[in-house]
Length: 379
Image (cartoon, rainbow, N blue to C red; front, top):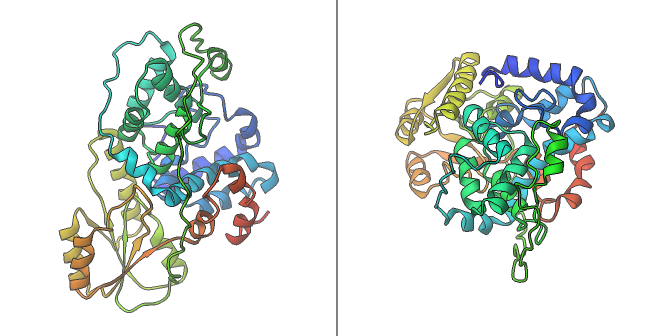
């Protein structure tokens, strides 16, 4: 776990070092898996997924050292995660279909494929895989070993530090040829040899040809993204905010506006010890940097906090598809009974981007310049 710091200060130091020493070669080096600790990529995803650090914060740091046109590929990768979440917002039934599949395949102890075994162990040991290796791993899982994409998505879900319902589900569907319909991603031995710097060469071990029957496949017509009612972060009486893994830095927006508020942080145990330890440590750092934040472990703790602090207006992180925590009838009914007015706050970054994420990434990519301007990111 030494690859992933537990404090915001160390994370920022790492990002500065990456910006100064590696980012200028990111576009040409990013597809190479040289092995852990993966110095050629930022490894920012576990933090961005939880918004321990935001997209704007990341870009404000890296743009101290580079111009936008010098690091376009890195910026695109930041937007990929936004795009996946936005796409799933307009196709929520895709995630509902995936959730109905609850069968986890047993991973063979030995497949005879050295690279696959290595990536499996790396994921279990560190909670992380290089993005290119995730693609190869998924392709081998589906086409060579013959497992379902859903079971592979479940395996990643249970073990990735940066698990995101949208990017994980849709990434596996993309490899399977369901996201870009009829175009599966097939891992090839020569490609693996080149992009692992000859560490692996699974010659004659992979199924490199596959014909997908896509006659009846469709993702359905996307529903329009309807922006929630604009909620400005203004000074409310008796204001409270709850942080969780959907957004661990939302309170910073209130601080920037010098708004007085009470804050609690909901921490839920994760069955994966490595992931649980990571989440616990970064939550500890948040509390260490703001001693007014109260820890809560369940809804009952939240109800007590609301009453003790006399909260009358409550801000909750917006919940995208697959990230439902507070959007439950019983919870919302109970806080309403406590005479608490609540709102799910959608960050402007998402609000601006999601409306453009209904089709393929190529179309979405055309909007990146506009989205950067809307976020007041220029250089």
